[in-house]
Length: 119
Image 1 (cartoon, rainbow, N blue to C red):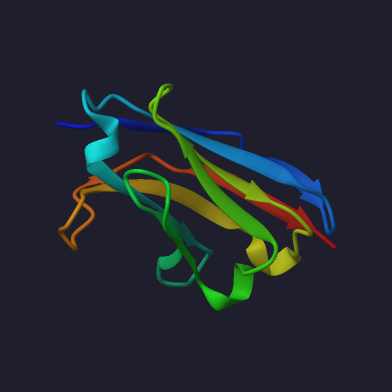
Image 2 (cartoon, helix red, strand yellow; image 1 turned 90 degrees about the vertical axis):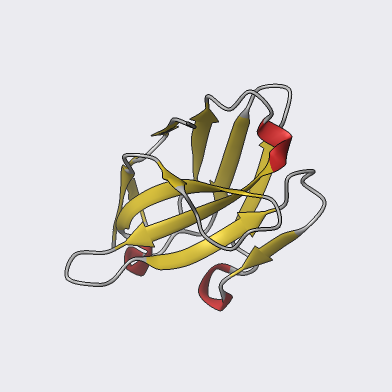
């Protein structure tokens, strides 16, 4: 069982930056690929970014490329999402998720952290 706890959300203005953190309880954190997802009011949850267990491979949805950066520190069992040049359309609850490397389903999810970007 892996527990994930997100933090770092808040209310910011357009153009500002935020860094989200997700702390994991996994004993061997590097075994898990990690992802960030978000869900805006009235919309389905969508993929934002993912990172491999080693941190050597990352992937982003097109709408955040060049603005968001996913990273991880396996010594701290933590994954980050640095969000720059935030836009009002980035407003959502952000969730981190974990899947065992080599599998496709994100089995473990955090409780989410709210990010609100005002115009």
